[in-house]
Amino acid sequence: MNINFEELCYSCRTGDMDNVDRLISTGVNVNSVDKFDNSPLFLASLCGHEGVVKLLLQRGAVCDRDRYEGARCIYGALNDSIRDILLSYDISKAVDVKQPFATHISSIYNDESFLNKDISFRLANDQQFTAHKFLLCARSNVLAEKLANEWAENNVLLTEVRSDIFEIFLKFLYLIPILHVIQPEQYDQLMKLSSEFNVELLPDFLDKARHIANPMEKSRLMSEYQYKFTEVVRKQLLLFVNRCIFSSAIDLVDGEQQTTSLRDCPAYPDIQLSVRNRSGNLRIYPCHLAVLNRAEYFKRMFTNNFKEKVTYVKAKHTSGKYNNVIPQLTLPDCEFEVAEIIIRYLYADSTDIPWTYAVEVLLLADILLEDRLKTIASTIITQSKDFIQQHNALDVLYLSWETRVERLELFAAKFIAIHLQELSNDPELKRAIVLSSERISLRQETDTIELVDDIRYYLLRKYSFDPDDVELFETQDDLEYLKQVGYLEYRRDMETVDNILTELGLDV
Image 1 (cartoon, rainbow, N blue to C red):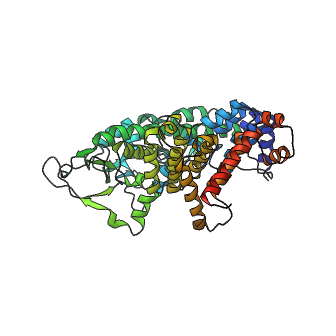
Image 2: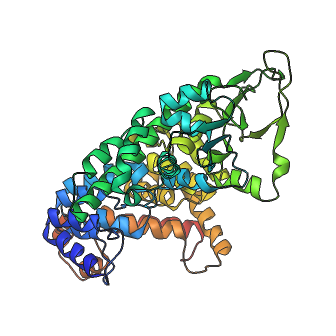
Image 3: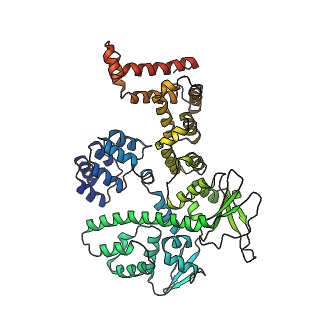
């Protein structure tokens, strides 16, 4: 095991926040585990060090409640304060350690396949760089203004910029980590170029870094700013989506033909995304393959044998002339609000999903093969008190089976366990148990009914028992004691489950 990681684990146990901060800045993997399968976050939570827990989360530690390690952190937290921190931490950061948003934006920089780059820069030494107009537009108001005017011809000559400086600058716009490769002699020109185009944060970082000689302190500064860069780009792309994509969308009533082109809109799209809502109306959004490609469904459509799902639209410009064709993708039918949640997520990693749309988002994410968004939507369902007041827990169970989201299945089982006596005579509960038993053959299992097992597990949790407690209580004759500890109520609930199984003729 890495010596620094061992030291990190020890510091998390002892609560030495300054040393934890230092060790993280050296590049230690905060999501690794020691020989006992303990992560740094678990150790800090178990030992009650609230400040260390917050620091680890801010620096990329993952508390994914759908995974074993995340669940251990929550259940093992020393107090409610730490448990609340873990439960309330921003879902968009808690789901995936790899930060898929930043990873995807960086990946399109070097992609030369079907992800259209629509502007070329030629420098004094004849070296050329290509980029996506929409990203440049989102990253800087100055760049957006130039793209709309003097750079409108798509081929730009920059004779005053060194190629090495421009390459670093362009990679920065694409969220590629470049801070560690910048040399001191490049600082001034990078600051000048960044300031000229009014690009946030890079000049600020360079101004601070030039005065730091300690490598460890500079590493800490890089880590801090790389996180800030990602957050800024998320906000910029969200603004771009609202300002340039949604405001340029075209609404068509049923049967109406599109007569204007989206190609000339301020979003600089290379694809149209069409959506039909329940009323039969059609809305067309100007989008970008480079971003839609983030969803596995669209990626497969363009890289495998699904190209027949892509149509091509030849639309008139307002001048009356026909523009070149632009491909059009169709999103499965849904409300426009749901489609826009999906678009905001793909472009800006926005996880602002109202609970009223969480089910529709989950179902659409399932079609799009977007597992992370499924996890986010299911988390919102299980955390919303309003949702469970408006929906039956058994509907959540069926939804979990349809979308293969275990979190929802466990949520439904827990709800049933807590409200077992109220639901025991509900025919729908009995139907759910039968359906769960029929799923056994699909899993080629013969010794258990998953829903029943989950209910029994949550009955133990309901009364704060473990199996050893139950074995001990079964040897006791003191009814008053058994009543006091809650065992008699637990026994009644377990007998209720057994009676339902007997009534259904199920032997497990």
